[in-house]
Length: 79
Image (tube, one colour):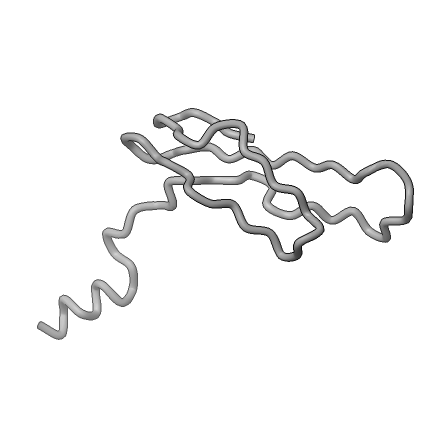
């Protein structure tokens, strides 16, 4: 029993995250007034089957969030 708990604790057999984002941070430095700041993240489904994205959250209310697709098959990308 202790051996099983140890294997689970060190993560053996856990699958990789099915949703990957190659660049997950948009560091723009000091932002001053002017045109709206825009950044697009690409999310790629690397797992198997269908993945449905039900919610996208941001750190503050001033960020507008949009998703090009809510359901992704394996290998598909959303922006």
